[in-house]
Length: 259
Image 1: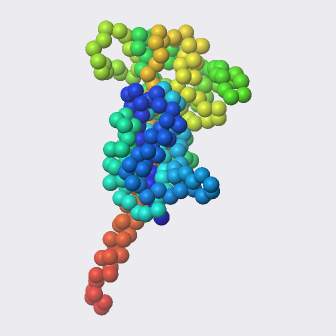
Image 2: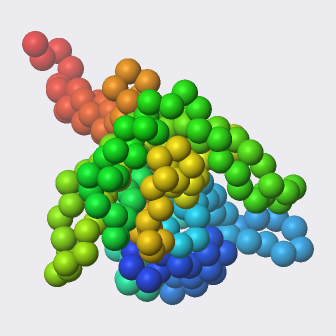
């Protein structure tokens, strides 16, 4: 009957929830909010929820996406509020649109990440970023399901720079902030791979683990090097349909034979 696409966050301590933990919490929220979910067929029916490119466990995110299928029509904003109230603070549903186009997952081709490096001098981080950007390739190693694999972390990074630091709590320790745009390739290049690359080519080794947050996720614009809103096509399609409906209604009110 209807498909709704949602944008949600993983904030604070909830960044340590795994994708499976979120799935369980979200399905409970669907039941609490009494959402008229469509279910799969078979002996063990499940709510029809499509998750797209979830962030790794331990990273925060402002841009996670999923799609749900309903058996009855609901207002997307009212549904968003109900689901947000049914989830724990930190797992926040911040946007909802009716799906008017296909291929949401196909529009998630890049991510914008922020890395907070406590204990790292900003000047040292800037030097390391310059070395990384100048390299033609940066090989890193990561343990995967089929064993340790070596791959190039540089080619997937479209943009990497240091960013101005604004303290969110009083501290005398240095802190560097990195912003990077990473294309979604195979194998996936994650923020920790970029940190491994910075360590390999510039000997940048933060004394404590980096605080990593995904700021945006969407279609990569090759011309501008930016990441666009993946829900924008659905909003535009809905606006076009609304305009057409209003035009049709206005035409129907004009009496026959009038100028």
